[in-house]
Length: 317
Image (cartoon, rainbow, N blue to C red; front, side, top):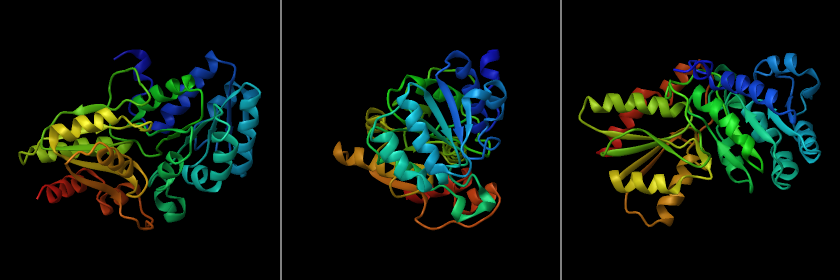
């Protein structure tokens, strides 16, 4: 493992994002950072120390923050805007849509504490609609990295995107999927485990938990392919078609409502390609979630390795 890679391994994706942002800011003075009184939570404290004139704390005013980032982008800056995912996607959705996406501006909205990330914060602070909201905005690229290595690579890769980007990162540490540096390509999925009985397509921490599920399934003679669909938009249609044809059965897994997110995106491709496969969307079953420690939430909603494996077995029956 290279020294560069080891810097980003074995940490939550939000931590890797903060380190990668610091690195690219040192290479490009156009990069500025904005947050809404959450510099520590979104890992921008070191950025503020290194580049105090390029860091802007907008206070608890997420809507204003989106508008300011759009204005900065119009002056030639590349703003990285970070807050909790629930605030980025709900409180400031109109400004993200109208000020940023409508004008196709190079604003990078990197939202932390996605999914159940705020855990004991409960339903009001769980972000389970964010992927659906940003996926529906024209011009918006949507990324959910599987782990810290991919989060760092994605942070750097989004510098080349002309328009806006939404990336969801995590407060809890995701299971490790990648241990070596790699070239992250927006819009390209990666098969992280081969299998022919069922294809599990996931993003974020659900990729690692799906790999754990695949290990449990293998003990029962079920070979599950696991596909990391870290770019939800533009989605890798070819990877979905290939997985569907190879396995005949497809299940999506996401820490998100089953409506509007990855499950819906994959279903659209399967329908449009007229593929005759068995298909299941798996995630939060259209309910408001409860408050509990993060591991307990994963287990309760069946999104840990054991829960995913159990659902696969039921689906295959």
